[in-house]
Image 1: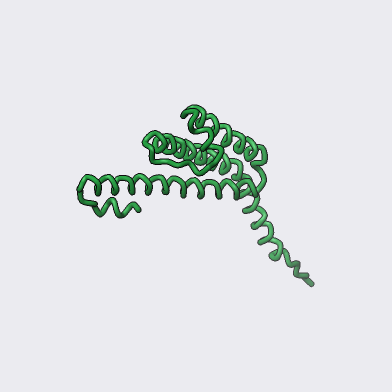
Image 2: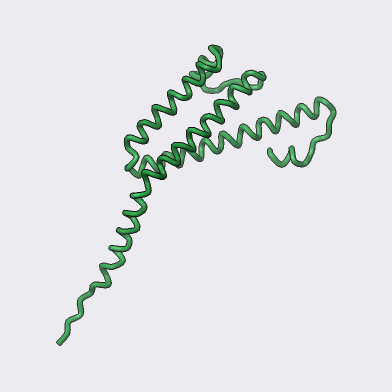
Length: 145
């Protein structure tokens, strides 16, 4: 007489564990990619901040950056690079932990929001300048707000 052994019940657990292992194995690569995106967007934010400050369009809301900004663009650049470098070193040190990946995604979303805000800010500036000069506002200008 043959006996039935329920081996099928264990197979989904093995497949799920395998998929989880594959996801975890790619975490380090994703952290590096996310850190690269954070560095790029931080650089964009720095350029836009310095540009807006030089044009007189900016009132810095970060009190530390506000105190550093009068010392020149190099001082602000060093400050921002030091902050992102310190955060990156911490994140890369714990890059295998899932929380670091979640926080990295969160920072990418925040920096994307900051980047879109900069684009909208300069588009609004273009609209105001057009109005002051008596030029018509185009539909493309309004679409970016």
